[in-house]
Amino acid sequence: MKKKHCYRCERFSYSSIDSGVWLCPTCGENLVLQPPMKAISYIEIKINKLNDNRQKYLDLYDKKEKYVENC
Ligand SMILES: [Zn+2]
Image (tube, rainbow, N blue to C red):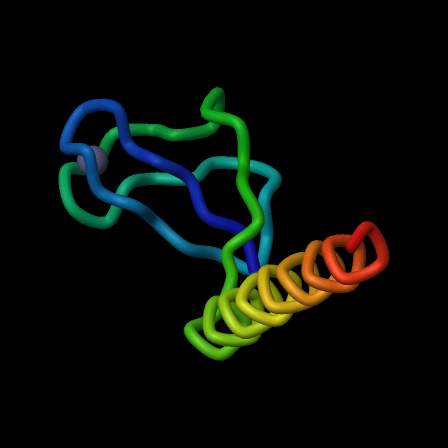
């Protein structure tokens, strides 16, 4: 799934195809020259957030281990 940002109305438009004419469903602007971006689902956003939190925890744990080693 791809998405494009409409510079005219500031809304996102989504499509499974990123070639050919791509009209903004809100204002009708042709977005063919706008670069497509990967659209991610809410589940992917949640997974990314969980992975970020996991990495923060691991970083803290690693710092703690190094602190204990130096004492
Ligand atoms: Zn638009």
